[in-house]
Length: 286
Image (tube, rainbow, N blue to C red; front, side, top):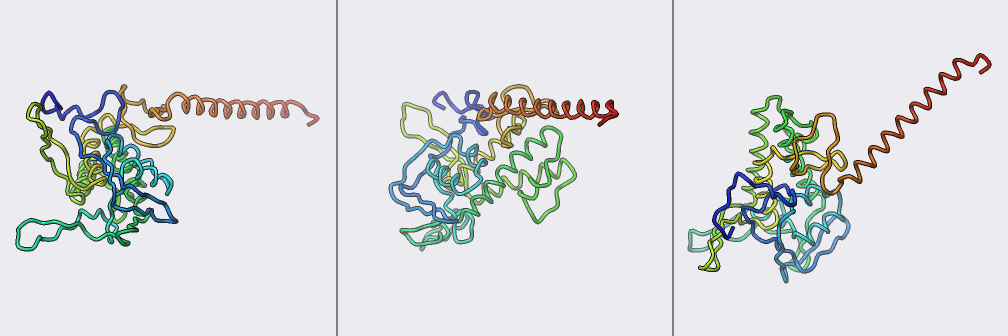
């Protein structure tokens, strides 16, 4: 960004293939100093917040499957700051006395020493984020996406049967994330000898995820779903061939080789069974 505003049409990081590129910087992820997992809750305190590079947050978030994953993510990228309604606390603003300005987020569950977030809500948002990018990738490839992903986007609506409606619904869900997080572009400028930066700001870690969803889905022609782990990823090579496996950087050749061996064993077993059946048919004494 030091050389001027980036070309926002080229959002994919050419080096690490993350779901959203680095060309529009985001606010730093703020990680609480104390995080603990107890039962179905993640507990934290708002002291000694540590700033972290938010790159890769969305990639890690959509891979969350349980409490241990939630804790690892929070230790790296911070908490979702969920309120008593199970929404990001930034969704609620109240007027400041005597001014037209607004401040204060919606109250969070627990006390000042033991704020907590339900793991179930984390899993809800992780499923929804993964569904958004998978459906966006499917639409770019001329498909409508799976029923499960559409239900994760909105369980109260039937899956759409037209591409235009599908695109509008995905865009609407991403815009809902942005509104909940109060994400907006902001100017970051600290040194008159260097150009100012445009950054996405607002909403804490949830806002970072919302902004990365925006960047990922707007560049969804490069998204693919990994055959190995089932997670969406940015594919820098040509589009995957229909019916053939393709793999993210985390799975790579290792998982591809493992799946090839598994298929080969299945073929060998099938061939052996067929040979045995043929031998039995040709032997009148069996």
